[in-house]
Image 1 (cartoon, rainbow, N blue to C red):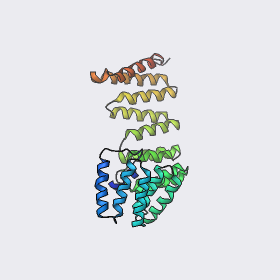
Image 2 (cartoon, rainbow, N blue to C red; image 1 turned 120 degrees about the vertical axis):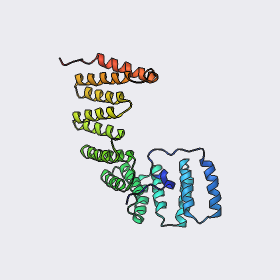
Image 3 (cartoon, rainbow, N blue to C red; image 1 turned 45 degrees about the horizontal axis):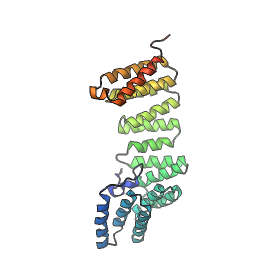
Length: 271
């Protein structure tokens, strides 16, 4: 059965840094009152550990996880949280140890699998990371596209491309997945397939010129200047169709200048 991430431990599984929010101080005060009233509840210490982690207060986060472990040594969320904390503090080997313990208690926990995949990746064990990513993604109801990109990063290019196409079949033509797939196709020498992806993305986008420029840049790198010039001219046409306020913005004006400069260096038609 596929699972959603427990909201309480969402910080354990999201990619990127942990950001403090203004409401956390109030949340801590309320949580401290609840712990004073019910000091034997390990869930409350897990929750407080998560709040401290959002402040990147690793010492207090670890202290609360230790308390939760004392209250319930076999609580699977405690081992998972300790693995997440080790990963956040640059200890992937220690993270694997804790996550092994978590998965021994709940073998099909996708959050623990995802965390262990990241730990294996940091340790350079790409096959183990790939296995855990596959298991985690199979168990998640609504995985983030970022998780598929992480998995692709530990696979060889042909397998990574297949995995991204599988992700697209599951999630749809997510731009970040399609862009990475195009980069892999270029790396594998499949220029036509990569160019077709950029064309499809341009047709689906509210800002097609950005994808048409990527298509043109790809064709320049592939030594196909005439086709690149066509893509750049199509990008200029897309810019011309933008609303005045957007077309006249500094970013768009700079983009127009870049396209015009590129076109002066490319042939307009085959020799």
